[in-house]
Length: 237
Image (cartoon, rainbow, N blue to C red):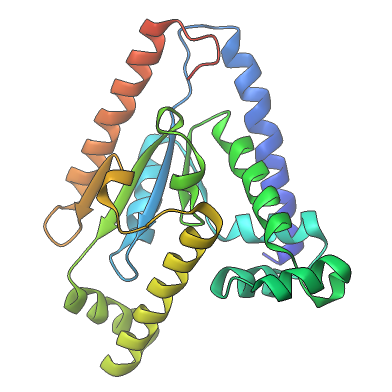
């Protein structure tokens, strides 16, 4: 699937989710599942866990599609958005991009576009969002914040296997990604991605099996839905 097809598919899904939400609002007992916002340490096996959550709980998965949608919104390339996430621009770079869009995408435009997309997804729920600071954009009652971690040696082995890298290359790859994630959350959301108090659950994937993780999240979703139904909150949240 090319970039254009992926963006159109995301647009279609967002429209469909809003339509579902309006239908659900007509039936008070039918509540959408909350968003599961996943923050992860590189190499901890988050992709397979996210895919299982979506497959077994009937939820929608959003990851790279968010980058493609931002690129479409701002009429820039996906590479430019990806570069901005990897290296948040300086104030001077932001100033240049504001004066002349050909110099890049400003931080403000990136954040506004990302926030619009995340809120559009969150309003209807039933979604798993991987990364992009989603846990820090949405208030606690709008999502289940899940942080997946694992020992460094295990993550290095996983990255070596996944990308065919040497141990040194895998270690460097993990270090680079971790720094990018910290910078993105610190610059755009003024938060510390490593603070366990920011999450509902912090799970070591080396100690907790995927089946157990799935059951934990499923139980939390059911609890949140029950609490919302009992509160008679007309927003569904």
